[in-house]
Length: 389
Image 1 (cartoon, rainbow, N blue to C red):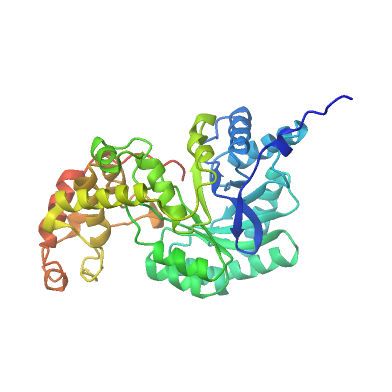
Image 2 (tube, rainbow, N blue to C red; image 1 turned 90 degrees about the horizontal axis):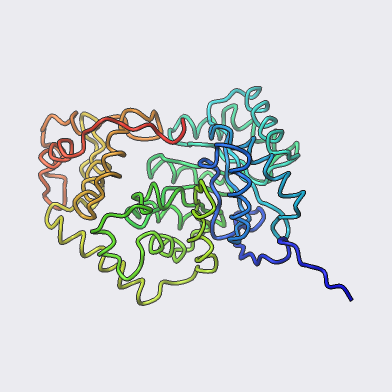
């Protein structure tokens, strides 16, 4: 008897977790914004994602040629019988502010580029301002999403946000969304409570770039490496988020080797072990030791600033700079201020006029104007181009 050789489809074991009311997804999600040089590159990366147990692909029209290349790569993978046990789960996004006519056309083009009749997950891409939430809940965005659902073009609706804590909380409390993508990081866990709210509601929660936007952990400082020993900062960051119950973590891969950590940790949800807890404690104590009494707790009691300086965000960069020696990351983030539209802050520390209204409100009695001036001097540099947009 001739034995049949199992295809990749049947050979790869996938661990899937609830994601809103849509299909279950793997612990890691392939973000396609870095594989935009060719269809061959996209094919290689998606194939490697499959081998790592990933079944969830995240893309967007603003990621250059990503959707075109992904659509072509998926056709080639299908021809080669390479696919998850059931099928791929795909998420794409639409920018807020489109008219109903524009939105319909954009969604049709997404489906055309991906060679799909229906997409599992459609997110509002960058729900960063109150006007974006209004567009989604009661403007032309609301009409667009309703039309897409009635036409069975989408499975469920979500949002990604770089906005404020209060805005994201409003979005979650609207009960309009079934999933969300948030900035959730080991070194900046301020939005973990929002993720907990979403999870309690039964929503899917995707962590946006927990490695790169979480401190460029793919290139950690010597200080960070020392503080996380014997674990790697990147793997500790992944485990921290998975232990918090986050549904899936995005990983933007440019080549197959970028997926090695996802492959290694594909089954690694569940509580932190003692070694991981010890490493996180050591990491936190190291930061406190270096910052001492100048540590900003990001409580936001200092706000509002008369000149609209985003004090907690800037002092958080200072925390990362001094506490973990993340020079390249903090410089890059600081110099994007005012250069990234509604995706990031618009006013830097130079706008502080030392009115000192914030000082008596600070529970730690920080000399905030002095710290802002110091941070500006240390981080001010020429801005680098964003990955997209």
